[in-house]
Amino acid sequence: MQPEDLLARFAKTLRSDIGPAVKAEYPRTQAFLGAVVLEKLATELRLSQAHARAAAADRAALRRDLGAMLGAAKAPASVSEAFAAMADGGDASLCRFIEALYASRDTLGAERFDAMLGRVRQDLRRAIDRRMEVAR
Amino acid sequence: MSQMAPADTVPDLIRDYLTDHIPGSSGMVLENVQRIAVGWSHETWLFDARWREGGETRTAGYCLRRDPGNALLRHLSDLGDQFRVLKCLEPTALPTPKVFWYEGANSILGAPFLVMEKVPGTCPNPWGREGRRFYEEAATRGVLPASFTDALSTLHTIDWRAAGLDFLGVPTPGTPEFARREIAKWRDLIAVSGHGPEPLLTDLMCWLEDNAPRTDRLALVHGAYRTGNVLIHDDRVSAVLDWELQVIGDPMYDVAYVLSDLNREGSDLLSNLVPREMFYRRYEEATGLTIDEDACRYYALLYAMRSAAFWMSASGLYRDGRSDDIRLARTAWSVPVVLERAARDLGY
Image 1 (cartoon, rainbow over the protein chains, first blue to last red):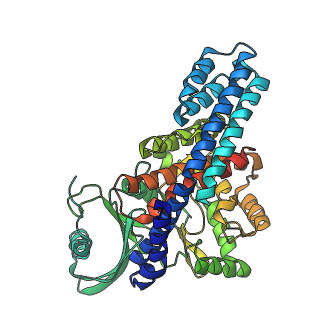
Image 2: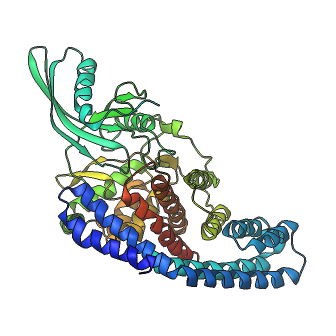
Image 3: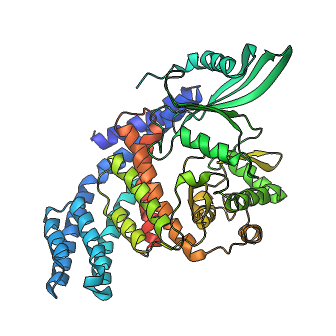
């Protein structure tokens, strides 16, 4: 049995057997909420590898596209530096890049700012869609 | 920090406290002691007290709130502020509980607490099936929707300076200071939540900073005005509760919360209770304000940030072992839900 299947089984037992047998309201709610949490974890675990692959591919594509956009014309140093830091592929560096974009909005000009932020938002949309597969 | 007095000792401690604080009282007895609202916010105790005073038997209903030390939003609000705000509101036309005592020290119940009057009424949960039915039925009668709207209008027309509420902090009118203060406040909560970086939230916060509206008219703003945060008696609002997020700021901040579809679970009725047209007409007539749709759209996005901060803080309490309530663990998956909603509102 895979870990995600085991978690799903635990959730089913909590929801179907343990929760209904608990008379007091607070612990009964805890049992049902425990089932919900285990179901979410099971789904997260089941999707984790596919999501990680998709996230890495999306982030690489984002870096490639932003690199081309930044290479087309001179960009503020803060934006270029934040872009370089995105090589680590992490969310913290993407946050700093977004902040740098907003902070340099006037220097970049509306058209360039909108284009780059729009490209970042494509990535954010795909990332949140993946998380919603678990969260909804 | 001293240890919280265990729940089973609290009634006796309260009895002794009341005896000490009601001059000339003796033979104090507490009846109908109920502990409600376990886990999420301040502990709330309801009880009736009976005592002898001047040869007569006296009775009174009380509500006690104690800070358990791990309440949600405790970084943003404390019981001392709540006490002070409620005291300021007593002489106004807004229905609020009368407050009697506040103890900031831990020496009595092991944590700060306040005692206020037990106002008659119920507070049906708008997220539950029974609560939704309650509000739907009240909507057909029409009295409660009007009362709910009127209470907000009263709140927004209070002379807050005369009431002594300027201690809450007054943003400069005609500037975006109010919105920026709110962003900073919730950003701080995100920082202390220990939640990992969220690029979508960063985008939202940057957008909010860039688009902060100017606030021309200042009012006392409740900060979470909706069904579930008002007490209802005889089909009317008998008390506005949950004074944890109040500020002096843009009244549209409250209006946006009332208009938000996050507070109505798919119902056409605002806050599951008020027909939209009725709310607009009645609120605008009573306050003399015109509802600013653009400002409300902005504040709806600020609420998305606020909700994300709230859920990050809630799930962080569980993650850090400061609460064992699994409902808080569940809220970790509420963060992407509100962020997804924000992305749609931002146009992506």
